[in-house]
Amino acid sequence: MTAKELRELSVNELELKLKELKEELFNLRFQLAINQLENPMRIQAVKKDIARVSTVLRQLELENTRA
Image (cartoon, rainbow, N blue to C red):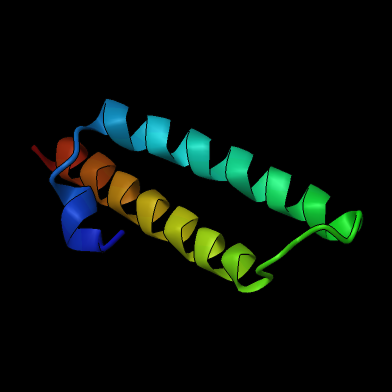
C-alpha cells in the first residue's frame, strides 16, 4: 500500500489498518519461530507498511494541531 493511498483514508481507517498490520506482524513472527514461514520477506514488507501508516497518522496529527 502506497503513502498516497493511505492519505486518502480517514484517521479511523488508518488506526484500524495499523492494528491489522501489527497483528499480521505478530503472526508472521510466530510462524518464523516455529519454522512455518513461507515468505520471510513478508515481515519486512509489513514493517514498512506499519511505518507508512504511522507516518501518515503523525502527519495528520500535526496538521490538526496547526489548524
